[in-house]
Picture 1 (cartoon, one colour):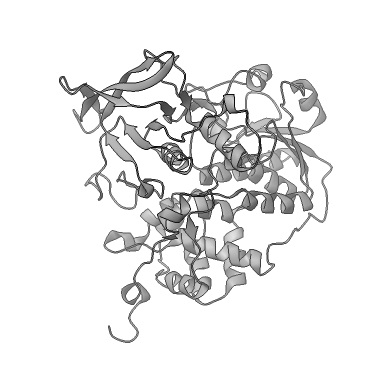
Picture 2: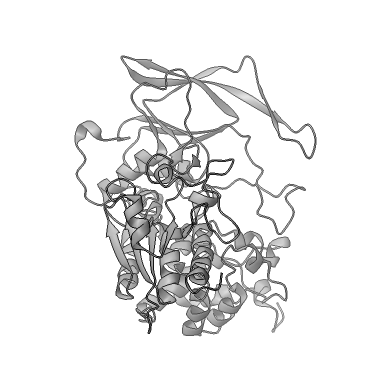
Length: 477
């Protein structure tokens, strides 16, 4: 290649590196390996600093990706960090668990391999921590206004961080034993080790944010008392009502919703003692995971580490193609086959499979009664139609079934019903354009408001809600 050729031509994309499968399935430590800093600079140099950066367009946070990639390529780590943290409160979270929709929208992805945006982001934030660039910066002045943020997941933490930076007194309430919400209890350590969360929480606390765990607002802290004690409240409790599968045999033991399984596993990894009679353990079992998304993949990886005999993941929808369809035009996020690190560790993936009933013996699940389905698209604007295929009935052995079919809404019983908030048609908390709920002085953000979504969207929601709350408290809304 001639001298002076662009780096995206002379430098090949190097995707994330992972620890060997035979090593990582023995523990719950991070499956990925951080790359050397020279390699990060080299990979960042592939960015062509587009005039119209669609990666920026597709990122819910509006991260200025070309700018910090350019600084990274030049070795200006401090400047790269400055640009990154201007739009992303927690790059160490998003760089580990975000599916990187920005990479799908990279201009290079039209006919080449996209920039390794997520890995570049991780390199920047971890270098910043190691170099001492990430330090507490408490606000110089306080406004005298107070805000309660209910829920300590990514939306709640981002909202609290922004409001605290604006000088308001912020208290974050969390009903669980420890802070972090879905980051701590829903995402396995092999994707996000919990010291990463604790490291950030220490900084937020040093900046003046008050944290109050094991407080279930609406239950052991009355809603009226909370509302009267603060100038504003932001609800960020997430969407935790799981989608169930109410078919014949659902009452058999050995069938659990995915978040119950993942939460308990995370608690066990953290050293919490779970009585043997209450443990959901895949050791020596044949595990069926119903649901083909990220949560299902997390169940697959967890089951491998617990010593499952066999793991099968079932998906009702057909197998996606490996490349974009004509209808999946760039720069949209394509519906293509995605293989996680958990899938690379073993197990089977079955597509277009419908579970009709659970089969059991002596009160415990033993198999799934399934059949294949066929999907058709009657017209471009219509919904796909599903048709059961006669003669394809089969039984799939399973003595542990995990339902990973997503979430339908936030939990209504308790805080939300007591507060008498208005819900939208999907059961989420309804808000106006300024994130205000039907109750004066009460705002909402995150999955609780928009429905089940990505961590990066939750952070963006928390930031937007904080801006509206700040304007309200300052009397400019």
